[in-house]
Length: 252
Image 1 (cartoon, rainbow, N blue to C red):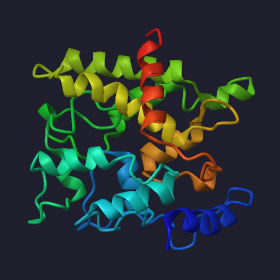
Image 2: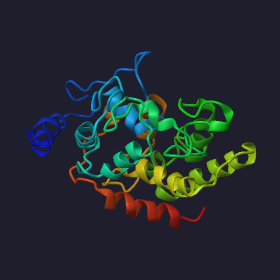
Image 3: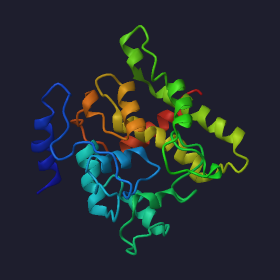
Image 4: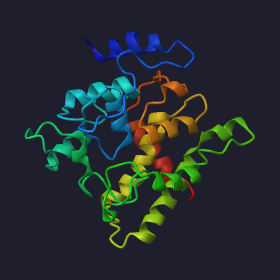
């Protein structure tokens, strides 16, 4: 079955409701203790919904292509280079050079880096699991729990996201004596902000709903219940690059 046909007939048909739905077979379930998860909330959310193997283990390129298309409507090959990077860095502990476990991605300063929006730095002992205290600082700067007075107060703009990212990096640099401002960190930090913005972007508004960001980071859940629907326009690496440039250009 072609991915495009599956997405069009299976998911867009389900999206006709009011938003209080999850695709059949892709309901959210929290990970079991033996499951593998990564420092990336987007990958973890895919596994929690079964767009990747729910175990988070033995993930191959075909699984990544299926998952990013079904979960977020990225073009299937959008993350092929990232997959190749993960396996070429010898991060995998699966015993198979063409697969990886999600937790393999936590190896410091290969793909993971200091100054994460939702994880503490490697120096402090746990760069893998969601850190509520770290994310609370980001959430405050994004205004995730502020109601506001206007409709746009329900959304996070590129400029707000860029400022929150830069502030988080400054926080990490102040408290982490081994903060590594490597090339990986310098591109990865704005890159991850660009990635979550593109992944959750509401084209009709030109911003990201705050409720979707909360679900994505805090629960590692695709925000179907908050109204997320698979976007009609497929996203590509060029979409991410364009957003990356917008994040870098924002005045912080």
